[in-house]
Length: 147
Image (cartoon, rainbow, N blue to C red):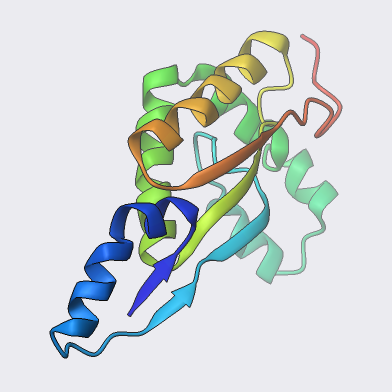
């Protein structure tokens, strides 16, 4: 089974035709389009899951140090190279599961430098994978904390 997007058909289309001529059965499906994602980030919020299962509201999670400000802090601390490597890992998983096109937002930086860092990462991943990305600046994802 294979998934196709514009890049995949250009790159692999002839192989599919050759397989068909050789009598090899295959299924070709259109690739999935993810229309809303924030794939460039550092840190995870797995620790919040137990709180939510216990009935905590988002505001309670945030008051305990979780939520978007946790991710913002970790993303600001992360190097551009780290964010790039993590997103490439995510991109490969997405491609293996059939996503060929992705609308990807920034939004976990909440300051100019960090948002630009995230947008640079979004611009580099298509060069290194076959995932098609439409990058979106989402600078007002949350109200920033000012120290």
